[in-house]
Amino acid sequence: MPFYKKLKKYVPSETLTPKEYSLKLPKLLHSEYTLLDYVESNGNQYINTEFTPTNDNYGIEIKLNMLNSIGTANDFIGYRSVDSATYIGDMRYLFIYSDRRLAVRNGVNAENSTSAVINLNTIYNLKYENKKLYVNNTLYVTSTQQSSNPSYQPFYLFRTNTTGYFSGDLSRFIGRIYYCKLYNNNVLVKHLLPAKRKSDNAIGMYDKVSGTFHTNLGSGNFSYGKEISDVYTYQQLEYIQSSETQYIDTNFKSTGKTTFKSKWYVLKDTGNYCLYGACNGGVYNAGERSVFNYEKKLETVIPTSNSASVISPTINDVWYKNRYLEFEDLTDKFIVNGTAYTRDNFYSNYVCDRNMVIFAVNRKPNGALYNSTVRLLYFKIYEDGTLVRDFVPVKRIYDGTIGLYDKVNETFYTNQGTGTFIAGPNLYKKYELGGTING
Image 1: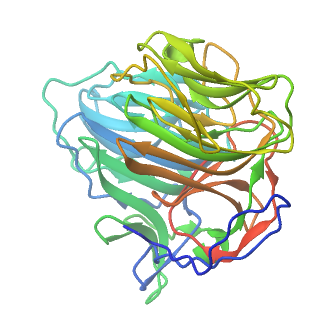
Image 2: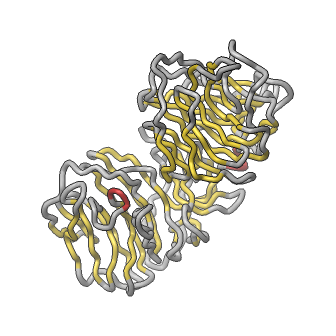
């Protein structure tokens, strides 16, 4: 459904003269609450998310910053229904060892730990889905454990739920949580955001799905970050520009029904640079879908199976310095500035196992990311005709972070490479956006 209103139409000019829009978006929370950048526990505060999985097809997305270690293990979400002496029982939780290894226990006491080192005072995006644990969108470990007789319990946040079992061995978490999403059977059932209740200044996590405010069940009080009016105010830009080391992970895997629309400004017409792409298994040309330039040629790679690809088509005489290029990347044709070029043998049952990235091609972990020196004005992703990503360039006001804002999912996507994006001229007036941050 539409959630913004354009007040004045504007088509970017060749001279990049900034114009103005004003966008008005809905408030993220009920008016009784103020959104916060994060909620922080000193190890004594925690909440009950009131989320109880119904099977092992549950998912967790969480953004956190561990500030200190409180013991051998630092549990930050889940439950532990175990006997205090034998540690035999049922459990599902994520935690960080004192040596900073990230680990998951799913069903039994044997953990699956990652090789990832979780450094103190560092922000991480963690995801657990289909029994796979990701750190900043990189897969580190697959959970192989599962209990034969699960007894699912509500998940706690900032520690594990051990209600009715033991209390002397609680592993807790000292740190900040910026948001947490919980899924059951791939359906989002909890979207927890740090918030302050205006009536009494209570600090907790507001569930955007149910409208429920979850407060501290421990002792003392949560600390908290800046109010949302300071944190989530963005300046829309005419473009963002890469310098060959920055890229955006869209957190979207393309299929045989995925199409793209985008607009670019060419800064360099020599060399070999990828605009966007991903390939199966991170293997070059293995089920790859990408767009890149080779010298002054535009080459578009399409999958002919889930393990093979071809260049179709190669387009000559379009990739020139100081030129705008607008693409419509379909399965049967590729359109450049209104001119269509036919494609052959696109694999209709294609499924990619790597996220599509922008300003590069995702060949992790088996190859390099080949980045582009270009300007991006917009990028849209469609799945079977439905718009699923609508990226616009923005700069976050309070810290100047530059990235892409997805208007469909109300999420800010930041650079996953090195260095920083270059900001183009201001296109819109300052405005506020709700949502979460990816990165």
